[in-house]
Length: 212
Image (cartoon, rainbow, N blue to C red):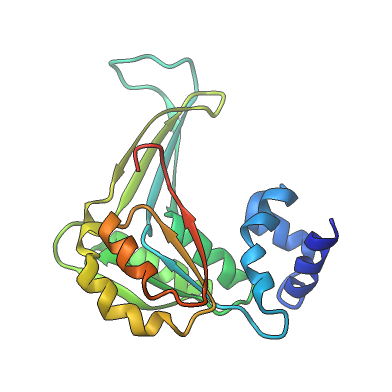
């Protein structure tokens, strides 16, 4: 508890503790604070973060009745900005912390929408590439009436463009950051190459899903 309070004290310059809980994890204090323990590394300076990879459009459909396979089901559908890295970057920006996102989006309406959302959260997107090939990443989830996941689909082909050569290209810039957040939507060889540039930075990784 004392450790959690120490982290909260450093966040209060940006938002109140109540607002931090709301932004980070819907009031689940233990989970919220564990995600931001990386900020403890430098109590005397503002921590920076480098989230990398997943930055996509999320579509969630929650069924209004019992699931019926092989046919359409009445549902409420919600489209929101998402992706592991995008969510981390957005929350850090809202907390008033300097954060830069290194990722890729398509040259399409979804990509422009996602970039606009991050700009509104004061996230630096200068490290985001625009692709004329595969579209912006997207994630589709179908939930039953109780909110349990029935099935999900992820179109993440665009992240294959973030190869080891890309990692080498951004490596020097990454040394400016005190903390990185990586996720497994990046190809394995790219993750390995990036780790070689981490130096003394705090490195946090999210495996994303069971297959990855």
